[in-house]
Length: 86
View 1 (cartoon, rainbow, N blue to C red):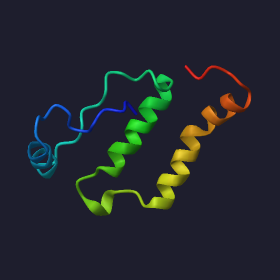
View 2 (tube, one colour):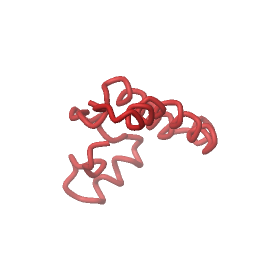
View 3 (spheres, rainbow, N blue to C red):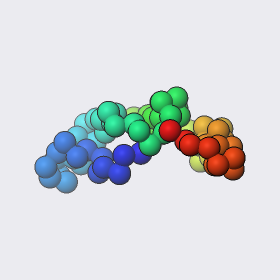
View 4 (cartoon, rainbow, N blue to C red):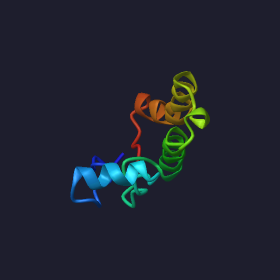
């Protein structure tokens, strides 16, 4: 979403891995200019669902694909009509 490395607040890969193992998740980016605010929040929510600590609570691939289509459909519509997406 931002082209930044997840856990970029950690200087070392091992520190980032340890943070993930403790259950930490990447920080929500403040720079959300790539998408409309609504799409940004919907995508971030999807990421959080996929990062659930309990593997059984995570959505399956089919659900994720369907959700992505729902979230990104407005962008596809804008692109097909040549409108500005920001």
